[in-house]
Image (tube, each protein chain N blue to C red):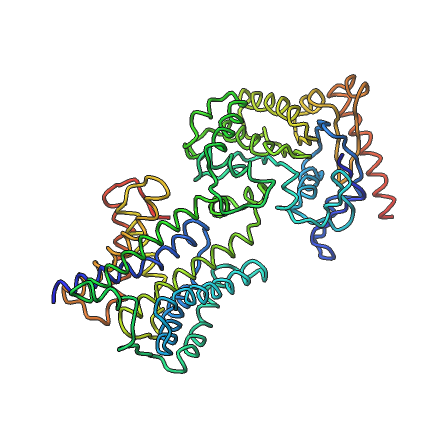
Length: 292
Length: 264
């Protein structure tokens, strides 16, 4: 039972990597504070639940989920780049609006169970004795694939242009880069990833909940900071691996807090405490790395 | 050839703080010409450069590069033919990216960006080759993040980044102003040498009157949004700084008279 508890945390951490990677892409690479994920994360869960209940293969729902998240990101992108709305505000507007959208996707209910339907772990369930182990294998494989894809992308000409936009917008424009287009691409990919994370979460938990997104970005940033604090600064690939590490460690820390007896109602408060600790720990210990 | 016709730039039109930054500016630059631009603060030099590069969309007037009108073209599209170096060395490159990555960005400027790898063996060789022309040893520091370079090195890199694609027009907005005298001279020498190699029409804004007259082929003096004086050839070679200042006062007096006529 205890193994299942800790293993479950690791599984959640692996599945959550998409969201942390999303925060990495927007907050770190693009230097664009994107709060849309509070809406696109539960959207992914809602879409996958809806499609699974209708009988679609759980694997086939994933590309649809990515597209749905991408649309949410595109909405923020259009607001920020075309309508002249402040990026932070645009993300908030979309996230708030998505609450209603997600309710519609789930058919008007705030909670949509998918128990009894096949999930991405079902196939692996025959290989492993434990459902959590099966989930760990599937999510682990997916995480590795996503990390490699992210690294590949940031090494391409488009990826390099995106990194330039995040670092120095004026220079990027002077070097012929359309900063508006880069932000759109970044937001679409980031929110697609967040939606994927939501979908994996729902498939693991067995139900979709419209409130899943509350505080999602906070958790994502907390995980991002933890990962950066733990991993050595050694280039782009390590920074991306740090995303996955941070995601898993974050979930383990939350699990540990629950294990110590933290009431489930206080998880959000506990999360804030963890973020504060992660932010101030380097300063206390005098380590060079400071979070932005 | 760069042709500018009737360029007008107004800020805060119809508001209480309306400013006419450029008043009907018309001038033609020949290919490969090196032009220095001087003028008091607020004369419109930077606005002129920003209007050419597309940071500001001109209210009226035409800007033609080799016959093609770019007045309505967005900044990042115009950038394919225009190279810029800013006054602040930090503005010309991305601090968190490496020397190699920055120059690669510049090399990719003239073509649409694809999903191919940005840094390839061939491109690295090209980067090394270009960096060696600076004679600063940067070709041996390809993976160093640019924020660790000195101001002079960063500005030299920014200059190289502006010109690697052989742009038709090179805009230098007081790019030596933030450098110490020795480094400024090094970068100035680089500027003259590279702009000639690239064959770009170069506009260099400077506050240094001596430099303005001795460097390049032509000098423009701007005042109150207009090109007041335009020297080249013999007349320019014979001009001293004192004479230039006198010409400035004389021309300025005439302009002030015009203003009074307008306001009367």
